[in-house]
Each structure stands twice: as C-alpha cells, then as structure tokens.
Amino acid sequence: MKNAQLPTVTKFRELHESGCFVLPNPWDVGTAIYLEHLGFKALATTSAGFAFSRGKPDGGVSLDEVLRHVGEIAAATALPVNADFLNGFANEPEAVATNVKLCIAQGVSGLSIEDNTGNSTAPLYQKKLAVDRIRAARNAIDVSGIPVVLTGRCEAWLVGSPDPFRVALDRLISYAEAGADCLYAPGVREPNEIKQIVKAIAPKPINVLVSGFNCQLTVCQLADLGVRRISVGSGLALAAWGAFLRAAQTIQKDGSFNLLAENAASAELNGRFRGKS
Image (tube, rainbow, N blue to C red; front, side, top):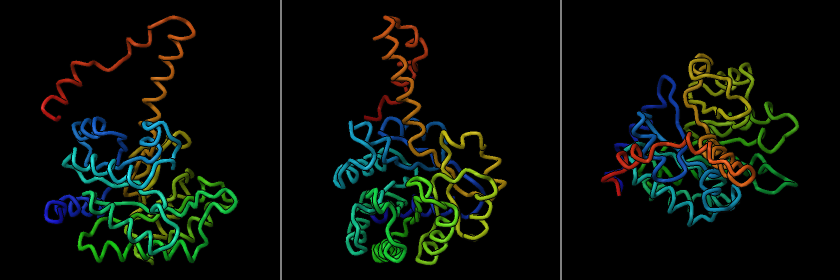
C-alpha cells in the first residue's frame, strides 16, 4: 500500500502549498466517482453524510465502519482522499495514535482530528489534552513513513463556545505548533475573522467550511482572504437529502409525482458508472 499511496499523498500535499482548492465531500462510492468526473482535485469524506446513509446520527458510526468506508472511497478514485476521522475514536493520545495508523492503512492521503469530546457538559477536550492528541497523531503519521496531511480541527463554533473566535484562534495556533499540517475551525463565517486566522496560522494552510450559514461566500472571495482549502462538509449529502425529502413528502401528502421530473438522468449515471463495478 505504501508505494501506491505515496503519489496521491504527494499530490495532496502539493495542493496545500499555493492557491485555493475545493475539497468536496462524497458520502459513498458513487458520489466519489462522480465528483472525480467533474474535475475536482481531491475529496474528503463526511462523517455526517456517511452516518445519515447508515441511518445513524453524526458521530454514531463505529471505528470499523468508518475505516471500511474511507477505504472504499480511497479505492474508488484516483484522487487524494482526506478522512473525516472525528475525534480519532479515542480520548487518550496513545489510542488516537493507534487509530490514526489504522486510518492511514486504508489508503487515505490525509485525515483530520477534532477536539470535540462528544460530551455536552464538557464539549471540548482540555487544551493540553487536545494538543497532546494532535501531537500523538503527528507522531503516528511520522512513524508510518506515509506523510499524510494532518488537519487539526477546533470545534468551538460547532459546540457553541461562548467566545468561539478566541478559543479557535488560540487552539489552532497550538495545533499548528504540535504538528498539524492544515488547520480548520468549522463554523467561522465572518471574513475578518477568517482573515485573522489565516494570518495567525501562516504559512500553514487554513481550511474553511462553506455550509448553509456562510454559503454566500465564493471560492474567489475565500481565496482573496488567504484560504487555501474549502470543504462543504455534509452540504452535498444534505442537498441530496433535501431533494429526497421534498419529493417523498410531496408524494405522501399531495399524491403528486411532479418533483420526480427534476431527477438526475439514469442514462447519464449508467454511462458514468459502467465498467466501474
């Protein structure tokens, strides 16, 4: 796996060195294949999109399920794939390192580790522990000999921290010092705050999530702010769910099938996937 993995890892690292690229998030093999067809340069998994496809809430899937999933996505495309690896499926740094090694073995070119504990009473790991977890992931990557891109995520906005900008800025700087290659605070939306994070973390790249709360921002605008990588998280999966829900609810409530007229063409999808199975 190592020799086959290195070219995509190298390509993924090069994407982070200059410019700005979009990292869309497929939730299954079919959507990964189609995003590659559209010309995107790399992909990232989405924990929420995958969980919903399994009938589970975000964060409700097991480590084994996620490992199989990211392995399937990585095998389905020639593009670099970044794994949304949640909190590493462990609390202690040593266990995070063990799980990171398992994720690398699935053929990914990058992975993210977040500081969300999943505990509503203490939603973020204490800072020292959070930094130690990033450092453990960094060491695991170095020992593996496969230099996948490590993204350090601060979830301050998503867990409702009282002062998310201050918390995120402080933690992202520390995660960068601990060895994260790319830094990410999903939920930041104000251009000035994005610009300040970019400046504080430079020269390391920043990933910004574009979702319903900040979808007015364009690629060009984010690039002008210095953002290097843009992801949409569960956005594409939710777009698909939105179309599904509207059509299904219209059939059930109104007895109308009109929304099915907006469906994708099966002939196009058959043509795209023919020979892929």
